[in-house]
Image 1 (cartoon, rainbow, N blue to C red):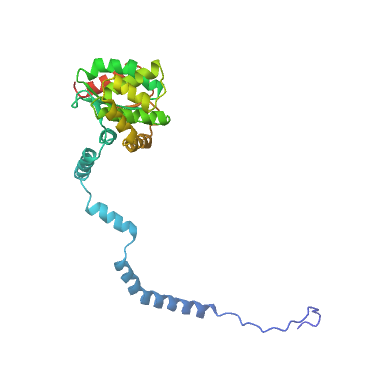
Image 2 (image 1 turned 90 degrees about the horizontal axis):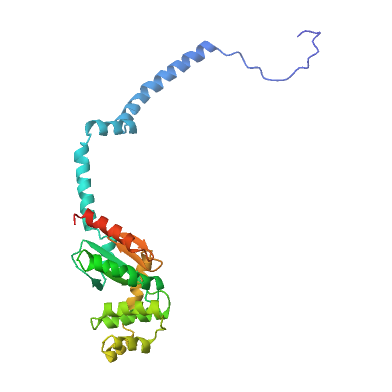
Length: 268
């Protein structure tokens, strides 16, 4: 130690300088040994599980399907399903009870209506009158009435009254009379008034009143109303013309355009 060096002495164990030649030799032999012993394990792994990319390529390369053969069965299945699946019109007509016109007509017009609805009365007095003359009486259109009695107790009772009239084959007569009275007089309805109307139209009044008093059609009217609302019909009148939905008392020309399009599409 230099007697002139004033640096403090640190007590520590000295590490001898490394022998790099020996270290490199040992690392080389260890690497060779690991590579030799681990190679069979790696080869075994490759045989057991191929990378996902190789599996995908193998499927595409070894079995590429013919596009026509692949899509044809699917198209047939879709077509069969479309034929077997009921349409909206089919579901509405399944429990319909009141029809006018040719049952085999190309076009079916369904009305959802309330006997206390002023717009429904206007449709019946004006537009339906023209549709009857032009299309229903000529066998081109079948007209169907469905209850949507949601404007209060008089609506429900009037709907029940038409069902009681239907027992005597007078549904349409009573239907037209109620709407005509609605737009001209707006008579308040109750059992006595409805029975008086039935008698005036030539129905057997006592049978009619017994039917109305029994309330036997209240459940059916409620079911029709809920079914219509369940399909999204929120107001009256509402219409389906071969699946085309119309809302409100549309003029005759609107119905005429759709009906003529449907007739033309069918070749009629």
